[in-house]
Image (tube, rainbow, N blue to C red):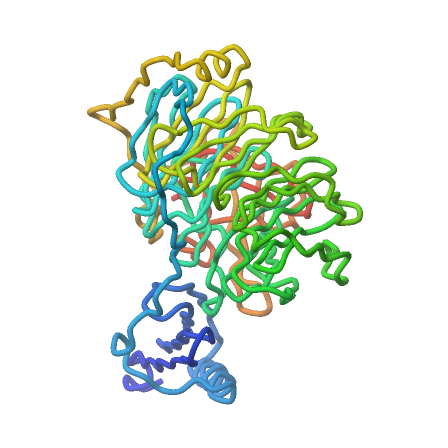
Length: 485
């Protein structure tokens, strides 16, 4: 083997189409026996895959084949950094003062400093994600517990059982279920994410062009459909269907991608979606929330508001229906559509919301997470003008902050696996992809583990606190990740 043959060589290609077409790069580096492929959105770090070959000649041949395939698809040589990243579509919203005579009974308010779309509330804590890429966790009394610092603005927060995911403007979906957040999904470079939902490990992505894309836990494309309308701000999923809301209504698709089950035109374009067991709720630009039967798509009830609806939610079973409009008001309706009350938020318009245990949690255009007492007694007092003084939550001086690990060296290293932990190993499959499998006994070693791509290295072993089996036949990590020496 000559010295020249071991000098690394890199080929960098880009594919950039006009309008909403592809805007992505593909880079192949040959370093001796190792071929490294990096790909993703132009301007982003992208994903990396590494393969090792028996000889330099075989490595070079494999690299040439990969480059040739991309050139035939329209990629062309380029200089990295000369072409700017495509602008990300951020939701354009306006927020007017409320016309309600009374203000909602706000218990506490936490100001994040930037417009907030992401919210999730569970038994233990509240989550808020804003356009600056900050995700904060708080207890139900407003105490700030921790902060995650993500690389780009947070579009939404979604939960799949215990696991919490943040969809970001950088095209990635981050798992926030442990102290080390990681990119669990990396969306295709030509998909401009509007909203996300996750069901049993399958990621459902709705985008600007009205497409619905379904991706599995290993970032592998399952199926896609283009709905009748664009600007798809709603996607919700369950075992029977994926419900896709866009500017021409709501379309339900079979969960396996087998085809359209029904389509229903709504009163105006859909700006937000919510679901219960038997119904989906669409908040629309024409001042309404509409309840659609999951089985047939029939409109069962309409909840009339006074301005465009940016968000909606329900109490369990749809007993009460809540809505937030473009005029900084929040509404409550009975199940049949009777308006029970309309109150001002005391701040901006609610871009997302969630009801839990007699409280309504809002995230707003002014970047606040707001906790509203939605009990009947509190609302009755508010309608008479009696509300508590909102408590402004302050950040703790020494707040723990967690950021995604971008390399394997950023992960804590341990000499041996602690008692009760689980060991996993990075293994290169026949197609050259790095998979992660369980080494510890008691698990199905053929299953893949959903694991951070940024820290995968061939043959490397990691220790995790626990693994949980998901319905799709893979394992999810729960707890911290450490590298095993």
